[in-house]
Image (cartoon, rainbow, N blue to C red):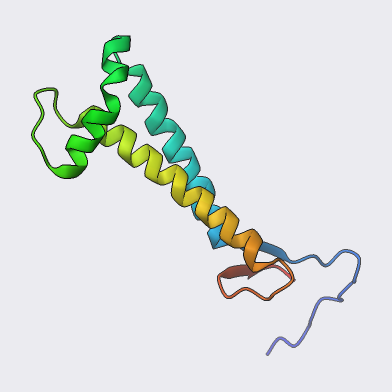
Length: 109
């Protein structure tokens, strides 16, 4: 039976805390930015850019479109991902950093 424990030094023993909320917020922000970049890259002209809000509304309402659903889907999911990321970030700041949080993973001693 191994009962040896390493000495604990208060200055060098640091706990690495990773918040799951922060990881999800960063992931959704990067996903949203990438989807919006690919969406804007697939635009062919300014007239199509003017039609993006209408295409997104038709996509949300379930109306069929001749242009397909790729472009409105990219813009809708990209915007939702950025809104989720912003909401998680605001929620984290609002909740406060001094409170013990139940969604944290703690590693190291």
